Length: 280
Image 1 (cartoon, rainbow, N blue to C red):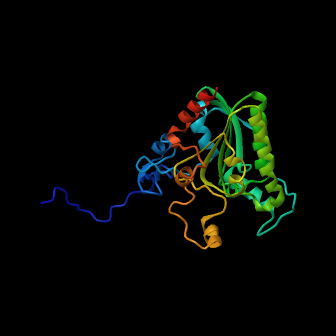
Image 2: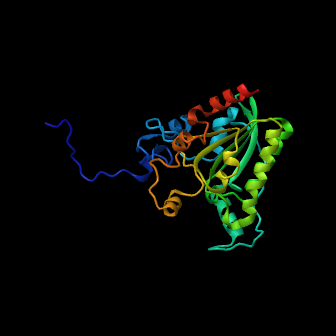
Image 3: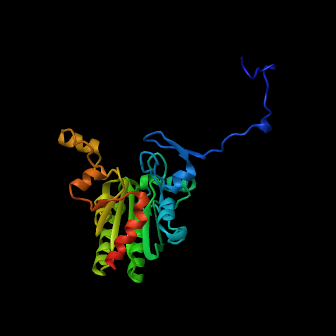
């Protein structure tokens, strides 16, 4: 016999009495589908507590993970792209920039800042994929170059966090010139014997891979990151063969000698601090 029997049917709860979980309270891992509280996900450096899937994050999250007390000073925060080629596809380039700024709250696909990481002074440039696929335009190259200048002037190590689809087609040759400019600046950093660490995250492709992303004194990556120049489909169609399993994953690239090590994001700050202390 049931302990409870409903005597009245159709009982309604007034709208003002209903309680719903607010949006963004829970996070579901896209890899293993495990559900966790967003606070737990953030405290775990935006990685899954069950399968260790590394969620794709932007500059603000990386800065909060790396800088002590999440305190930093941003360089050239208001720099924004011009329209040297008067480019237009489905919309005019300035309109696309304006819409993307409004949507993302970012001025371009990279942010540069300096501060302390485990009490070590450091300059960090971090790319944001949400801004036109993290594409490398004139502003990206210039902000990275100025970040390197700041590192040179103040004798600080430089960290580059790459996440990009490659060069920005709306700027054509101007975009490709950033490969040479950033590479030349990194050569000056090398001459000054200041450490340059390049962190490759998912994905790092195109002209970014072909320039500053692979020029680090230490090239490191996050687990499972896609790293390459051309995409797997383009390569497969070009050579007419099936590609090896895991081709262009960070683990595959490490095995073939193009990375120094793979680092879990939860350990990133400690590993970088230890590495820089060994170099002092």
